[in-house]
Length: 500
Image (cartoon, rainbow, N blue to C red; front, side):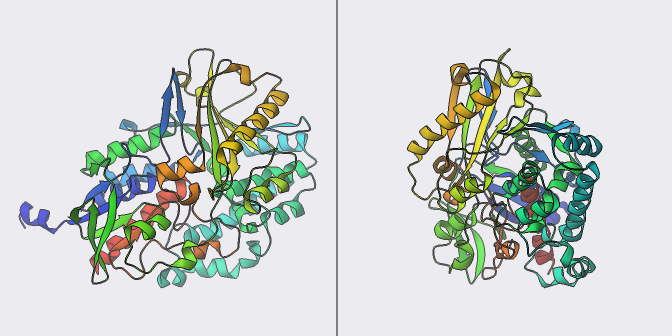
């Protein structure tokens, strides 16, 4: 067979959006003998993984936690490219520092034995009880990961595997019928420790008082696989994958807004960028599923029940250049609210922001000194907030900033406002505007009921052939690891459908 004949056999895939899932899908499809072209509205790749540079400070704009690097490594493996030429990272010995209103300070160590010993000293708990909790967390993950994370939940063959049968026969151990808070309260007496483990609901933008107890498997991902710092900060993940995709031959179009998906005879045939039509054999949307239907598929019947699922939480982020250093802080830091239930009631029930939100501070200059001028630190200061439903965000920002500064100044015993040198702000409105995430939600729909995983939109269209979906708003969910897995699921679906 001639080289020209081989080339003509390659099918073309168009990907709408160059977020982390879009990049992963592009790399996988290009490596699987597709010609891939990506159209991105913004001037650069990465989606929520963006960066800000101002007066000598560099800030990662979006996701700040890097776990499960094996999913990044796999992309280089299938591409037959050396990861060391593109990307490197280090494992953190300290996962996170925690600060409570009663002056308790707790350092979560990556080493499980150190973690358990420190927890036993800080809280009313036996070290073995902590280890037992993590063992239970691991078991839940092992029983369900191949079903809920690695395959499409909307294909029959997923349910015909031995892994599925094993999960079903052990369903009683998964705590699906109880909330995460109830599971943690039953396991631990110390309310501070309950609050510690309740916090993992925020990893997918959910409410620990409503999300099912199976979410207690999330601590396993952080403790067993570890947390890491990518050299160059979180943005380097997107930049490295963009470079890899380019080297593989993926074609990128930036400042190129897709206005509609071309559909004929119930099959996707390409996209329109403005008035120009670009044809393709398959189309993948990395755009949030709600605007994908509302804007790009105006003539197709939308799955309203799916699109109207309650959304995950959003975020209000202050990027502060801090003129000073804080040795008691590390890369990841949490300052807990006094009343956790009240905080989540505000976010998910009243759709507002309380006066004592839990504060997360990420400081990449702890690992990457060039991210801040000498003697300074770059603070990414975030609180969880509801999605954008028309609230008075300017008023919320003013009040939240005042409350955050008072809390941090009191606990750290420094006047923080006086040492802020630069400030940028990201709120649900700007998140929605820049990333097309409906209501500015960070993780698509919330996981606040036990059927949430099955209610997420599938990675393929059930009414339009050759149309697929990846990213945080569809299966298996939001966050870097799950977005990377969505790219894997989509690429495998396309490969199987193409062979058929």
